[in-house]
Amino acid sequence: MALDESNVFTKKPETRPGRYQCPRCRRTCEYSIRWVRHSKRAKPPAGADREDQARFEKLRDYLLRLDDDVTCTECGKKFEIPSQHSLMFVDQIAGLPDADELEREIAAASDTPEPEPERKPELPARFTRKSTGWK
Image (cartoon, rainbow, N blue to C red):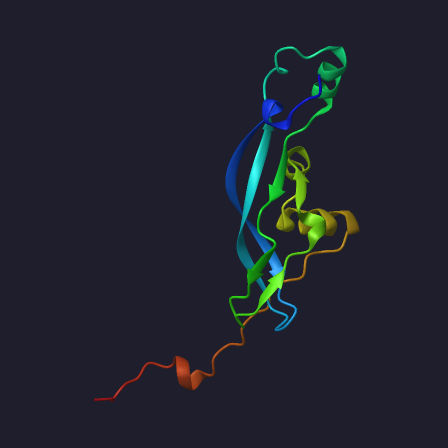
C-alpha cells in the first residue's frame, strides 16, 4: 500500500511575514505571505506495512508557500517571490537564529569592541540659556 499524503499529514493554513526587495524600486519591505503547514500525524495510517511505517518515520513537518508574487508597498509593482523558498521544513525554521542575535554572535566571535553610539553635538549656549525678559 502506498502512503497517501492526505492520510499522513494534516494541513493548516497560516500567514508568516517575509522580507523581500522590489526589483523596480530596490526597497526592502515586509510582506504577509500565505503558507500551508503540513503536520505529520501521530501514527501511520491503518493497513500500512513495514515499508510504509519506515517511510512514515522519516517524514517531517513542512511549510508550502501559496503566494508566488507580492505587490510592492512603495511603487505598486507586482513582483515574483524567489522560488527557492517555496518549501521549508519546520525543524529548520525553528533552528534559525534571529538577525539581531546573529549580529551579536558575530561581534563576540570577532573580538572587536562594539562601536559607541553616535553622540549628538551639544547645543550652543544661546539655545540653552533661560529666556529672561521675554514677554
